Length: 112
Image (tube, rainbow, N blue to C red):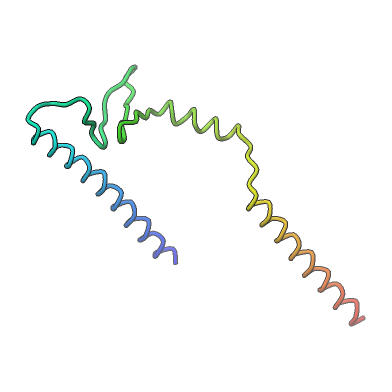
């Protein structure tokens, strides 16, 4: 099962990289077909050097830095959201556990 999930994850990753590569190739083709550099045509994925020797990645026109990712991580850790499905699943599992435990105790008491 783990090998199957690993293969699926590898396949999905390869497909995602292939899509980004294809988008970049299409962008390069459009630039060469146009004959001049058009700043409105952005690449699918580019890496540049930012301030303080920090690497910046641009994915589909959105600039992403490690600082942005760290800020988003902190923001997600601070936000406490209520997940209805998680709460319902916990309630259901507690109910099943309590029911099974009371049935076990009832059967055990009847045998005495």
